[in-house]
View 1 (cartoon, rainbow, N blue to C red):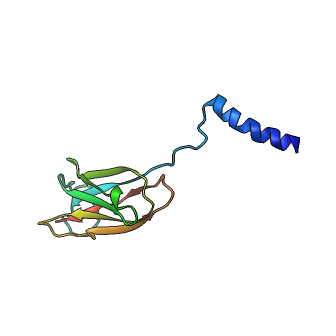
View 2: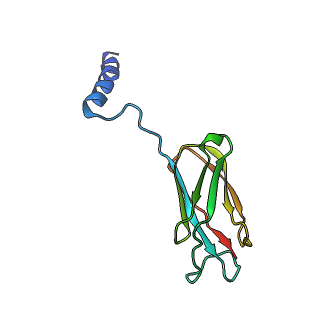
View 3: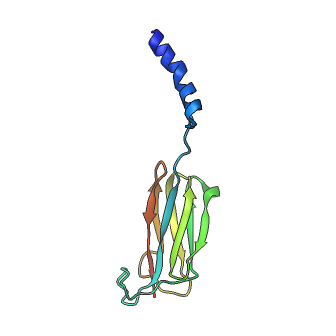
Length: 125
């Protein structure tokens, strides 16, 4: 009994001495991908299909609406949404106004306990 009690008292002291936090920060998730001009309309990006710059991609978590985010694709059509702490169902949507979508314009998914890095691409014509 004494050894169990001694271990229970020593463990927090050891953490304090080593600098390891008692509760580590929860890992965050990332959603990334690209928007591309799908020349042949097959929904899959080929090497000769250029990225589409300046398109908005929106992240909407169902249970955490305050964590919604919108990003704009870079010069190569890439987007990245980082630091996501929301869990549960979400939707990812491309605002491709004025273009025909060759892939779904909205994708649904689910995020678990963080540390997830998912890639989703969107094709347009």
